[in-house]
Length: 327
Image (cartoon, rainbow, N blue to C red):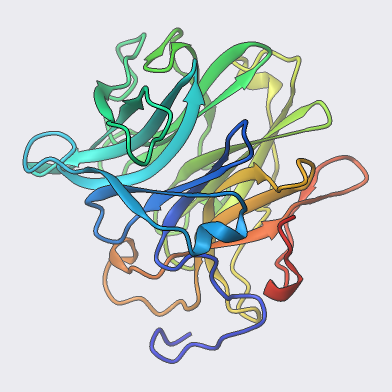
């Protein structure tokens, strides 16, 4: 699809334009918080609203800017906002202007009540427990709680030459440090994970009916980008890779008829009713990209309702925008 003459459909109207890697957090008071990668990759932005819909028009506040040099000075990617131990944390990835692909995971902390106005403190790189984690290109960190324990999942490249991006998991002993060594969760095993680049990245957690579902994104960031999924029983050992099951096929991919290209890097959040699960993801309205897809700005945030099949597994189906009510 031509990027200057693409077809608008009933399905591809954006939620928030030019905001990739979207993350929405619902706080205990019912407020919604939105952050995402901006096309310039130079800052972290934040929005707040009492409703999901309201995020689209909410004021966007820059709460942190990249350094002029050294670490965290380029490629500020995929921020996520979380509330842990009565403090606000943002996990994000950043590079060094002297080595732009030296991407590592970093943490910001806010101890105030209003993350839009109160100061954020740089906590540095997430502290590892082993000698292996964060030694190479590491990004897309997410954290989640299960059975009173906090866990961290992230993407990291290994090998030499055209490296492979895997997903790893570890248990945390604080919001800024890992308690265990990394455990390999998934590598790009299948053809749909190996288009242009061999990639598993962008993990997201969805809990439903006693199971933990982990979605992730695969392949390069163009129209081949898509979502896969793994799952595990909530009572299982999350650090046992054999306890996880990975689906053979992708669960969300490009739909040319609907004008949605390269869907991925999603998150999950409850709608205002506290029951309906929403999947917030990014995608482009075209597949014609000049140069590196990473620097094409039109990955727009979008939303779909998650439904479940008779086995209790999430089903991802593109919906007409006017049919998508987030209440």
